[in-house]
Image (tube, rainbow, N blue to C red; front, side, top):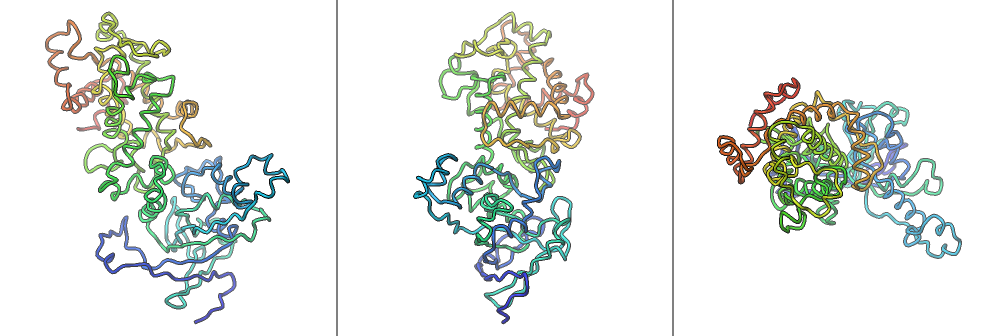
Length: 507
């Protein structure tokens, strides 16, 4: 065995972590190809590892879609990396102090070693692997020479060969630790990190590893995890067992809170979050909103049949629409706002009828909102019921999903530094949506829906034939009926793009 590595090579331990029983698991070459029985363990300077994963090349202003930006695989929380950077320099509790206190000599006694003993988990790409439409060439890839059952050399390509290539290593877990080490940081130039490296691991297996490392043991916010690693939204193993709806329910809950808390939208403080009476707390319950979102926008992108969910995954398998929580919230708030505005302008018989009845719910805080339009808020309006909410979110998702390529939905990116979902951040993101092609489509959709008869079967003086039609929409069985009715109405729209899109949808 050659124990002297070639120039530039990285010595590594070859770890066999495999059970015979795993040979009988279900594998498929397209998404879950059988992985290697070995991974590699080695140490590497943080600066060198950063260079190999291409972190230096990424820029938020580069114009490259996030789904194609191979410099980093997931969203970056700058505050988290800054906290780790301070910890590396001075340990805990010195790292928790503010800038002024950290520079105070009196606090030097608080400094401790900033150890990071937990391994960064990476995947070594193989020649021919493709990321973002770019294929890794053989001379830009890392080659592995197994010297024995327990020892190997990793041969790293010359830096000049990496300039125009995709990075030969991609991070599965530990990117924030790497971001903590800035380029040219002489103080931490020799700081080494332990690395666990898989070789040629499929993206789906990488998503599985990220889940088991970050969510299952530590119980961090699952909704946030699906932003950090959007590929998790499309994993079949999360659609069974105890995690049956972990993404769908956690994200739907968060989006419902966005609607309730964001001031300039018709559901501000009008969702019944506490389970009290309808009159005092809101016409539609939180649970109903969550069920509606799970059944429409937040369902799987690639369902077994029919239309998928706009927020449910990534088009094209592992690439495409990876909207953040803030983008999804901004889209939902904007869609409801545009519908309420269109309804307020409607002079159709149904809307004038509800204005005359004016049986508006007396909800605390409603006096402070601009959305007091009886055609939307009346107790006789379907838009103030579970069925109406479900119906609108159904067709909103149906039509946008059917036209996602033409509307260039994947080109709307979150280039903000927002770490929290707040009303202010939602509003800021919503303004960027107004610059996208989908915004005009949403306005046309809502204009068409404003002419739909949104009266309930309980509306006084409703014609008998209309009452029977509306009665079919009551109860859980009414969800399918109102969706069918709305789609049929949209197929008759005078706005061509709306009518043509509605004909593409079948339920």
